[in-house]
Image 1: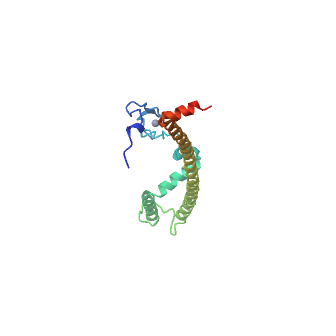
Image 2: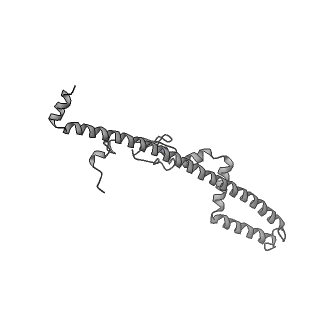
Image 3: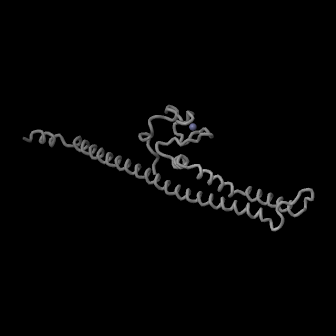
Length: 190
Ligand SMILES: [Zn+2]
């Protein structure tokens, strides 16, 4: 493929173009920026909706909480913390530390109750996060479709315009290349 000619290059160079101002933090970004360069902001600077921002805007408090909980449960820290505190609990109630009185003797029914309640909340959080993930997928597909349709319509409009322009140029070229006699004949016709 040949390189694009100078004729189709944008007439305004990057240096001359107006900087893209972030509507949230007001930072001036380069004209071709897609996301705000401010790491704390990271706003999408496109002309249409950004799916992640849309989803964040729609999230309710319990969904955000469930996502955070699921995020923490999925990390190795969660296992380490549990192994540590269950180990300490069993050690204290086995009489290893003679100074402290046992508060949950074998078979550690209080520990079992606490873990059962915790697993109830965790499974609830995982289910909420999963439902939200499904909703995300639907929303993403919808926004993708919207952008694709809008782009397709625009390209279709441009295609029609280009064809019309090409036809017009062809007609003008044909008129210009007509022999003088045929032009005179055309003029003398009643
Ligand atoms: Zn910003």
